[in-house]
Length: 408
Image 1 (cartoon, rainbow, N blue to C red):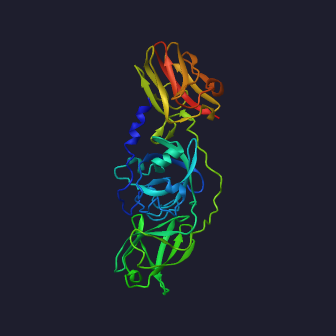
Image 2 (cartoon, rainbow, N blue to C red):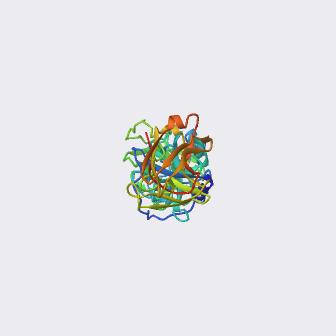
Image 3 (cartoon, rainbow, N blue to C red):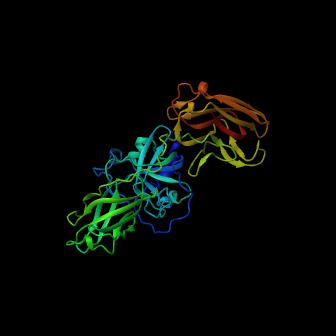
């Protein structure tokens, strides 16, 4: 039954790779308002596409414990619609069915080879540590919003490469909000020069005389995606070598003062109402067994489209499952409309999960649509979680099913 979720794991290797400056069109990401995100999980390395070490000592404990993610390529410009790479180091509050965590962008899920990251729906690849903290195996949906990173102290540079002639490549890390621009000047000068985006990081390609082995060193000025410009007071000299962390001496302020309220998430209440409920790749899905032969039709429906399940002989049936298990007490009632295409018959409907099933509800069918509702508190008493709507039959019939949905 749930083994069919395995298709999602084929898309899990989303870290690494490269992408150009042309970002594909995609829907806007959530901002300070909660929005939907699709996720899968992958095994993250300590240094992802963003090229900062997620185990660095100045980072929040949660990040050092692995609460990071790879953001899908179309949103690599951050939730502030910046240029490619600005999302690196941005933080997102993610709310699953059971938990809420703040997670930092550390990696990229490129479109090439990863259809799930193509921009059709806002998407994260969660590190395995993040997925475990949110109790979110496989593939699923959650609610998310951008938040300031829970950093303490100053922002830092991680020195990725440099040479005696003034070339310098680095990443900014431990910043509260995304970095929009980086500029540098000689320690005793007044003229600033722009650093250049280099993938997820930055480099000094020209005007870097201050960073040579005989230069006076340089200081930095940074502007956040919120528009705050901060002069970083500390001077980077040639003594800070490749691989080292350099304390910039200052930190961004969160100018939005985002609400402390958390998001909420529930599974899509419409199991089938003119189509299967849910987002792309994370939908309610039919799983028939034995001779059951389901299809969608617009003929003879209560309204719009509905499900027609032919070939139902004794012992045959189907599940309509959701990729994530949820507490049946999330909802008050399960409603549906059923009928036999011809003649009469009887079916049994229920909800099931890995930990057991709710009480079965028998329904007598005629060729007229009949509304049926199940009180979930009564039918599912003692059942911790469910993930499937299930129908069994005891005699041959063709079943019509419409407007199958949960109600609060």
